Length: 194
Image (tube, rainbow, N blue to C red; front, side, top):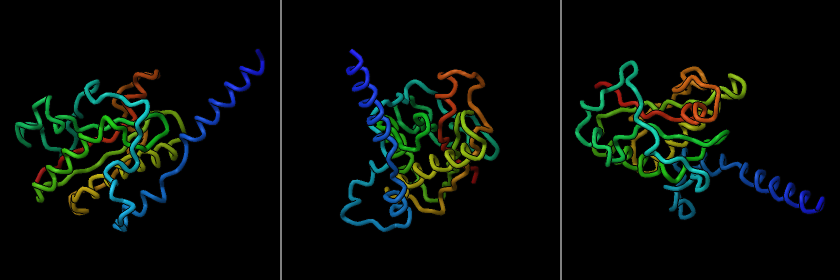
């Protein structure tokens, strides 16, 4: 019986460690525009298939300074069936990988930005309160850069996007439980007033 517990513990440890591998080098080449045949599938670079949260569980972000109201952007931003109505991308704990459920959201915003070259967005990275302030600022930035890279690969201009990290400083939910932390691990796509 003890051997089975040890095997189980070892297997779980290996699974956890294998999920922590770094994609920084691969993502860095995308940011620098070094696209080649190996990066033809870049749309899903930095994407996690497992343990995803459904975008349907969460609403869109609230207005901040200089942010455009959804009604001023067009009807497609108010249609719950349209991925543009979701302006928040959620992440798993301690991860900056875009989950499978949020690829259509990022792709829809990328296509909107491509077809509206005068429009600008700020990609606001956030983290839950666990971890140091410095770590959470860095993690929020990594999350925002993941969205940035995915949009850039799809053709969005650098001049249309800005990355900002708030770390744990602007929580969406104030609780100290997993449900609140889940809402705080995010990137908000904030459209700017022209």
